[in-house]
Image (cartoon, rainbow, N blue to C red; front, side, top):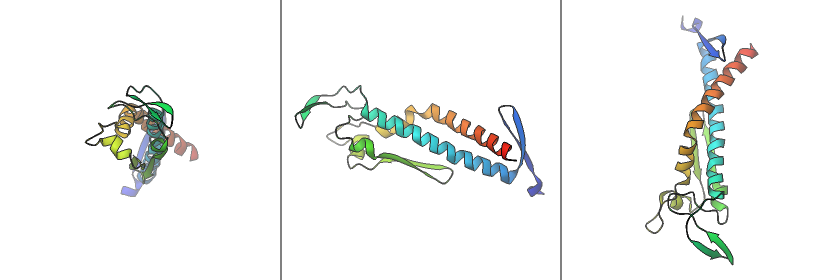
Length: 152
């Protein structure tokens, strides 16, 4: 019968036998946990990119202080911190993550306008963490297999 089916999962050389239902639960937990870790990594990348130099745009004054803008294609320059603080993510279920910014000018920075060339901070943060995301997801699965095997 299907309910008697077993699957062997291996992590770091250790093997454990699980029912298919247990294995599905392990994969679901690992996927959600992995997405949370990836979300935190992408969030940090986007916020750090906005906050930190290099920026190679024009210099201008805001409220008497000298400010260096970002050039097209770079992360946006951090003027008030509003955009940086508005970047966030949410994991939905076990297989979906929403990542974005709620600041009013976030979309203008990401996509550009007819007056402003794009400064794609969200897409760039996701792309810059792409390789690490795969490693994080593998590690999350490995840790979940180990955790489940030791709980038995």
